[in-house]
Image (tube, rainbow, N blue to C red; front, top):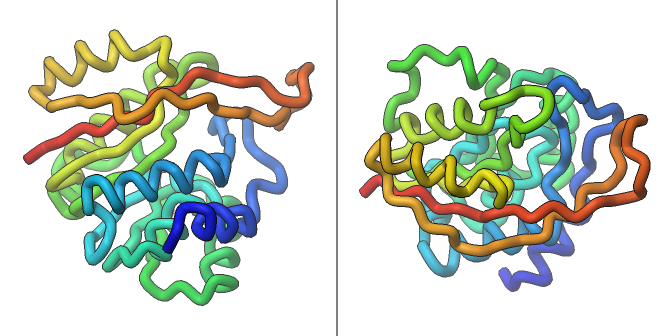
Length: 208
């Protein structure tokens, strides 16, 4: 599947109808999702036939893209039942059968739960800079426990130094695969502009 074809498919994925501010629900834009997945698939070969987890999966754009690229199984984890219902409908519309959904609080998973249970984790976690401070690091820590091979994640470029220190503490190799402009559309009442660009790092954490 070519990049443009993948992006075109992901543009058809339904997003949040009523996003919840407390959960920092922002959909991963189809262009960014497609570029992330295409790179993971073609450069690193870590989607096809792999068990892939998507933490804070929301409406499922990353999982659905991974499933289209031939993942053996995609596991979507999210605390929000409403988001998972949209995800379920999206997966059915694309007739994808290699997806399972798990409703849970990522930050409350027992430490021993799902240790090294998946090959690859792909996620766009809450940035945790405004409403849920440190949430991005909680997601990352859980992801690193779950993955056997690698974790791919989006983080604000402004937090890169902090993440590098954490990666060093956790003895994990970290590479910034790309610097992206995240076009964040107005989703909540307090947003004054139609959209705003945020500098975001697409990061690979390797465990092998």
